[in-house]
Image: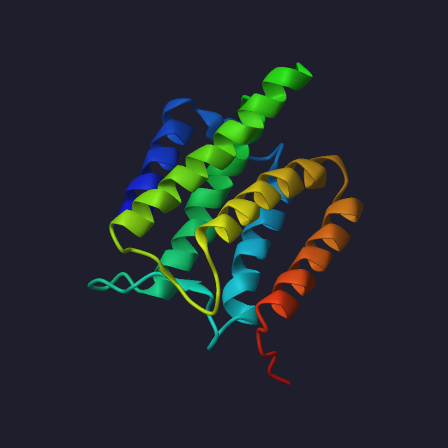
Length: 167
């Protein structure tokens, strides 16, 4: 339920601020972020290091789909639309978004709406949040830099958590 409320909150802000007008400007980065969101369930199917318990019709797959198609695109546009120009305020803004996502995960943990497995911990989720926003910014500057870094992080996590890769 927390993910739905969080997603609807971002979508509401996205719509009320008319940020949808900026969607075309950030379209390639939105595609990148959504694609990255779909990589996790593909790579880790059968060996999920985190998962969302199903309740009613809202399954783990529906949750991943909601995040990749609504939450992450809304977040991407809102992140870039209001990104400050000054370095110090930009750093605080960046950390604010990481903190917001980490806070949402704390709520998920408290309400037992997320399950960690295979050695995954909250600190790894904060690392992923940090990488998400950093790579989002890097991608907006140069996709040629963002993709190799993303691949290195993916390989690092697959090796660290010993994710079996099916042939």
